[in-house]
Length: 288
Image (cartoon, rainbow, N blue to C red; front, top):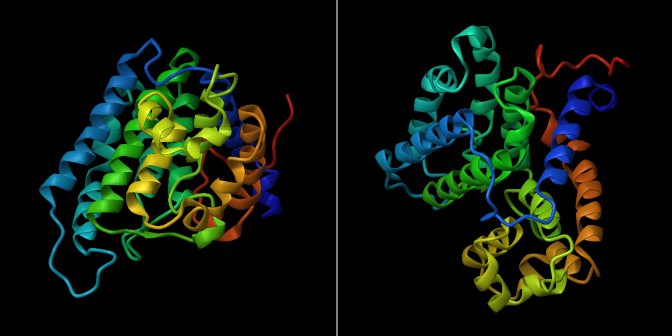
């Protein structure tokens, strides 16, 4: 773990997360931003994954969780990943495709255990980070990376979780922030910084969530949790309930970044599956 925390990969990954965090600060999902061709192609790639879910209905099986049809869906991605990535990466950068495709395959859950968690989410962020490193995505794509691509990714992951009843991977149960995601809470809280009237205490208010979830990722996450879980919010999502008492969104945002490093990036069960290569190398950070 020490080697990982000192690595170029860690520095690049956390730098990428924090750059996007700054980029979306105070902006609604409905904000006008530039959508490049690369962004459009990434959305098309995610739409393909979504369509495959429709083409692979759950099978009848005795156990409630972990529907085996997910393995059929995953096998298709496993086979097609490089072709999909080739639709986004221009021909002159084709040599990078096999490496980048590995992160895409890692980002949708585990086909043996039929589970999904923050390590898979991190693989998708690493996939986007690699596309930035090879120059497919650029600085002015920042907002679209979060609002268009990552948001679409979340929709597809939620559909996977619901359709195949995926188990949460390495979940801390009630003590975790959320069973499946973390990054949309970070970026979503950044979106809400300096909001004229929505405060952290409002996200446990059903009316506030229903009226504003289309503008803010954070509230969309809360809506999904309340759809999926029964009982009092304070009981099934205790950590989030505690966060609602924090006075400002900037404090929430800073706290979540600290928590993400401690609970996800510094936990061996999450990071043990992280892949290293020429784009996200394990060697120590080189100065300069």
